[in-house]
Length: 540
Image 1 (tube, rainbow, N blue to C red):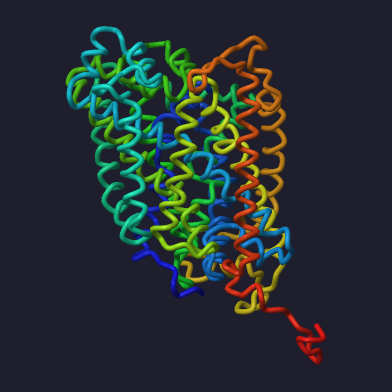
Image 2: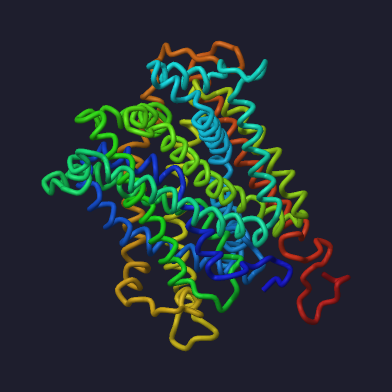
């Protein structure tokens, strides 16, 4: 184990950090949209099944692979796969583990800055004025299109800059003093805020109608395969699976620390925030205010729900201004803990494999993410954020999760443990220092069910949802958009943007090649040759 790498200060710290990475906008915004679209309480059933069959096992897989990487002195998949697969292409396969956080951070900070802005507008009363005037849709549109100003500067750019600096300042403090400390403070505050909002919702007149929609399932609707795909996708997104985050965080655990219970605790905390807090706050509240139009409200999507529908809902209840401020502040705290977790794998790669200092790594990733963020802002209306979310926040998550499950079961799972008799290296690492014994049924699920289910999910999802987006069937041939003030065909823009993403992927792999070629990732000088016994270096 590389003794120079940081470690978590406590078991509670790592559990809260992993929970903080998972508890974010997906819990309070994406989950309510998915639930409202898929029948409310009916959606909970496939969600819980996907959580047990896919979420928990894949989380254990990521924790184990992360621990293995940490033992080798790495915090990301290129270094781990290089050692596990023992083929030159292993490290390049691991590059897929760096792409989701890179693509997601290009747009996540911008969305996070919207929440900060609406938190500010809620506290100073501006947002309630807009709601009461019936202009919330217009206000939101002006804000994201950079027409809302603070002085001469677009308000969205000002809040983006503040949010960007905040994230980078926190991540620069390191794993223990930065990430762990932030989550130890933020997560209890977030839960208290969430419970306060739940109590307010449960004390509203007529709340039983809203709760009935959320907790009375229609079992006949469970035959809809789309609902099961949506539930599995939600579990992936909300648990931060396939993003490289859990993998990276687990690499900072000590060798004898518990993984099984820690992973289960973090996953349970996320499920609590999603179902109990997110589901109870948003859907029942929206139903008693806007009635049967909840499905139409959900069609506005995640952003429409957060920045248009919820302000309208809070505007119609007593003390709505105060609770609207609490709502957006809670969302911003969740956004911060998630944002720094998305950045950390990229920082870890720079530190562990390129041997950058912490400041150098933060400066490098900060510059790259800022440039990507500006491109995402300029291309928002053209579909740049949708592309980033499709590749980084959807397709690559399932792809990486599938690869991790196969690597665990078929490669590390077939390697005999050097320390535990009659045990594979995979399950020996997972069980080492465990506070509870891994149930036997989950060994079967992890080794056989999970890889097969993920392959089926990847293929099904790609065919059902992916092909239309991949082939641009959802965009009209004559659609025109603006990018940096230039009018361009939307299909041409998307094709150009995908070329930008392809170049980014090539640059990531070039960085991996350089890290190994220079010896930075391996700790060996490139000038040192391997010489067979009995042959002199001159003869070699």
